[in-house]
Image (cartoon, rainbow, N blue to C red; front, side, top):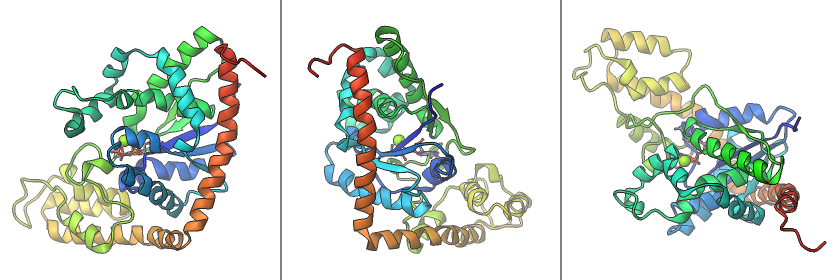
Length: 337
Ligand code: ATP
Ligand code: MG
């Protein structure tokens, strides 16, 4: 039996938002307390696949994300945080694995398809401008996971097709070159996909529909005041359907003790949307406060953040080097001792 190892990643395309927190980070916090190696990749190379024209954005967000993760309670003593681009072995594996996947299969990948659609300004109306790098994103993710012998990958459900692609690559590799790699499994959290302020199925950094953990009071207020509610409710005391209301949806996340009252009052027409939004704003700010205090600490101690990243990357690289050595031997591309 292969040792259990947890590998997960986040793209430095923006700050951590509620979707990440409730969909992923909360789970990471639990998992880091198990006696299992835990690797958290800051996936800057993957961020470049659809941000290659904005290198300064990706660079800035490497530190921002690390600070967010630390502020949420990711503990660098338990979680190995590393920067993807500083581990060239991952890029090597990506090249090797690119022979094990067809272009047609990549085009069929539901996550690639969905993201292509969201990024029409970059990849064209019908994906005619799609790059080799973006299409190959699932291959690079297979390299991330296998470089660290990741057996378990905590993620949101948008990542499942990428994980399936990784499993296929692993099977093909093992078939051709002999049993070497392990097929990873997903660990889904209770909230596999947090919706956006606009009611979109997914809150996403790049979708303009997120509440970020770093948002200040004014921003949180503005965003929640603009959140999508039941469009049929016109007057304060009209009964409404909380199930299509984003305000109720976020009450469920940050206001668990009170959410039944919110629901029944809303259904009875005993709760106006403005008052409901104001309550949510207060609860959201209370939820964010300790995280933001920790964020401020790290913002004032950037040298600590850099040290954490350096150490995490060095540790991770040692393992990735060993993996590449093994893989090259299996592929018979090791030449001199
Ligand atoms: P981008 O739009 O730039 O891809 P993103 O918001 O999708 O950003 P990622 O860095 O791609 O963020 O994802 C990091 C992790 O967070 C993944 O495991 C992903 O599944 C999870 N995640 C992202 N958005 C959500 C969401 N709305 N609900 C649940 N999990 C999410
Ligand atoms: Mg994403």
